[in-house]
Length: 290
Image (cartoon, rainbow, N blue to C red):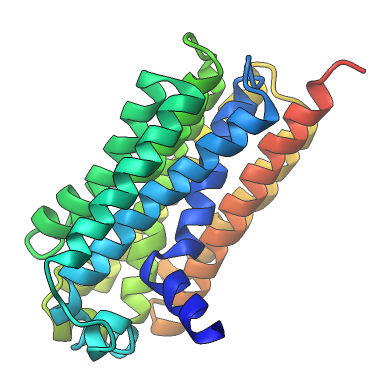
């Protein structure tokens, strides 16, 4: 039972999915929740989680040949043959996506559901099938999947969202590339063995680390814009604290590129996003009238 549960978590990439669902909730929170009841908000979050899981599972299935060449991924169920390939798997993932979209539509309407679909499609097809093996800028476009989740939450809450959730969507778009480039830089041998042209494996270290630093500086600056638009000090402190951690680690990576500093920057990106989302939720809670 435990083994089956762990396999499900792995195949559906539920750890990433939970973070993406959290960004959808943050989009709602940044919009003041609007008419979203707790039950509808939870249903949309589950729909986002399911759609993310469907695209993540398809990623595992489609990339099983690449996964066998990478130490980081060679133990995945499709790579090891624990789960044998067959037409039934893509059909099952498509069914999960359809059910997730239906749940999102029932909870939040057509426009929010469109954004949920675009997030899954971007990761599952645009990134996994089209770009990952072909372009060093693959994750730049792939990063839109997280932004679409924020937009799904924002437009679920209101048909005319304020600038704050739209800014958060831009931050997510800028956050994803340095997050994954840092991981790829730390695991460069794996990505080269698999023939995946991540920027951090095909460009000189001085170049890709500078691109990471510039992305990080831009997302930190943009993440502070809501303070100028009325976000409270709790949000501002959380965005600033997380942003400074990420920015400092990016500076260290640029000055001294190595697997160790790249992995530290990868960890800092998670700290930054976690604090940013926490700031959004706390700020929204503090705005609720007593």
